[in-house]
Image (cartoon, rainbow, N blue to C red; front, side, top):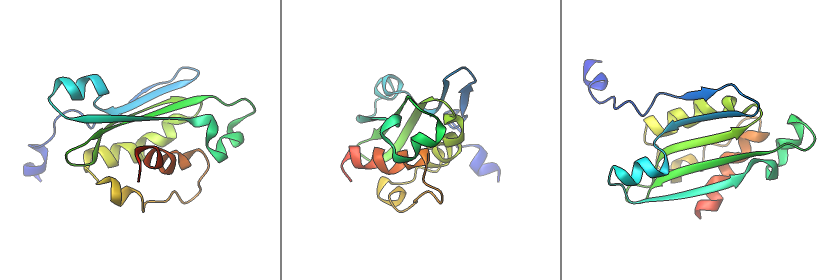
Amino acid sequence: MPALRATADGYGAPQVVFTDPQICAVGRTEEAARRDGFRVRAVEYDLASVSGAYLLGDGYQGRAKAVVDEDRRVLLGVTFAGQGTAELLHAATIAVTAEVPLERLWHAVPSFPTVSEIWLRLLEAYGL
């Protein structure tokens, strides 16, 4: 698959800072996307508002942010901050690197929607 390796741009490498809370991201930040010339829209959601967040503890706090390429309607980057958010990063990495259209992501319902329900909430915040 040498042809696929040639398309690697470095934005598909997930990053996790194992602090309390965890901070993790993949892809471009909103600022980097704009600097790179993309027409973007960012959507954010409070992770504590996700139904399954209570499973992670009383008083759970966290935040999710998705950076969307408005022209292609794909994710350019995703950032999570909160306890246990590194578990969400693999799905974000696939969505960003595979350039999955938002309309297709809507159908990728998490099998055990606890805090991973954030995907549906982000897409709703975007307006799907």
